[in-house]
Amino acid sequence: MNEQSPLVRFLGGRTALFVLSLALLLGLIIMVYAQVSFIFDPILGFIGTVALPVILSIVGYYLLSPLVNLLQRYKIQRGWGILIVFVALSGLITILLVTILPFLRDQTEALIASFPSYARQLGMDIDMWARNSPFEAQYMEISKNMQTNAEQFLGSITQNFSDFAGHTLDSITNVIATLTNFIVSLVTVPFILFYLLKDGHKLYSGFLHVLPPKMRGRTGAMLIEMDEQLRSYIQGQMLVSLCIGIMMYIGFLIIGLDYALLLAAIASVTSVVPYLGPVIAITPAIIIAIVTSPFMVVKLALVWTVVQLLEGKFISPQIMGKSLQIHPVTIIFVLLTAAHLYGVIGVLIGLPTYALLKVMVQYMFGLFKARYNRFTEKADDQYAVIEADDEVDDV
Image (cartoon, rainbow, N blue to C red; front, side, top):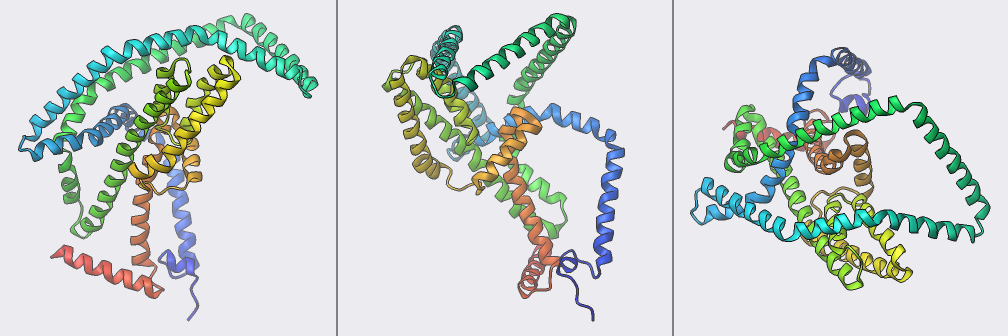
């Protein structure tokens, strides 16, 4: 009897011809899909239209469902509990808009008005430092090239003004269309969120009943783990972002940094994105600190270091633990890839999507190994356990 290759046995075949046939079939499927991909354009358009309101509704579901469940424990019907939560949330948003938003708006307007002077002063400081540094010759060469490129760019604008105007008009049209879609999505979110909070628990059992009985046990376990991953990530990340915003605001007030509330709000929002968010958040604060005084840069670095240490060593481990169980390098690669493919939306949903796909692939791979990779004793034991589970499901 010929010794079979581990790869062949792993894929469930008997000879290398099986592996080659499988690879050929996969290539044919990809080729056919590339030729008829236009058939899926309406489906992709539908997904692109409903993606934003569905994502926002899912985030709202995981944030508000604990409150609705708490009210339900106090004998309040779920529908009335959802209405109470909606009314309370609307009141909280109104209070924030009335009290904090005007102050935040004033700081934003003041920063926008002052930012050109900050940038100009920063450029002058960098120019002075570069001219008095050992890299003066390289700096002058770079400055000369930049000036030449700027003159060429201005000349091309003058020569091709009609093209630039056409592109600008197209950009304005796209912005208006995007803004309209965003407003429509925001309007539909409360309705989707209401039905998710009211009947979301029924989706689990409804989906399982569609599947064959033998698949319900393992699929149910997979769905439960996916739900826990998503719930812990969304709830934990929101709490961590809120804590970072509060700590940054207190720290900025202590060191006397201008626009403390606005900069803390930016840090809180951008910290939703791990690793990349803090880098984006600290940039405007660094510019303001450099222009203010060198000592302010030192104080800003101290505040930032303390906040990051508290968040990394105490807050995140207590709130989020190791919910996603993703290596930091993998997180960076996922964020960069998602940003390249889908922009800002990709950055926001990249990590939770990866976590869900990871759980799904792990379950499918475990099932695949247990059923078809039976040339080891451990695999035979796993297969026997699965067969026993199937018999229990049938009963």
